[in-house]
Image (cartoon, rainbow, N blue to C red; front, side):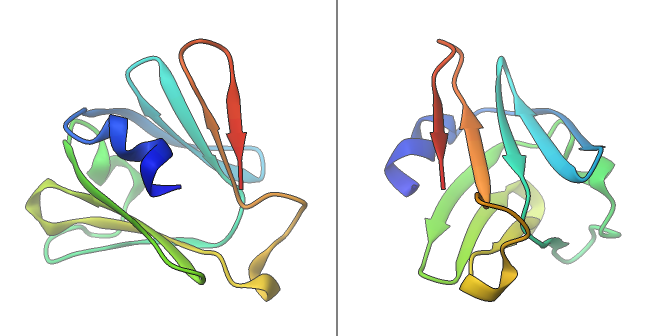
Length: 104
């Protein structure tokens, strides 16, 4: 996933919202739908969804059990990728500007 999302590094979050039963992160004309449990962590975040809006994505890291999107000011969005955390068939869906999608 890191390679797929690496192209978004340096871009700013335009919107982060809850849509029905998932979260949607918009960066330009692309979106990342997050279905698994997630948390916003960082020194001054207040852990609110709006805290990410307007921030630049600085890094993307993925391990077997977690996806971490790190933003400026030390804020991080962490998505739980452990097998027991899935609430449906996919954890994350990245919708590209060209209309294609990548599913994890």
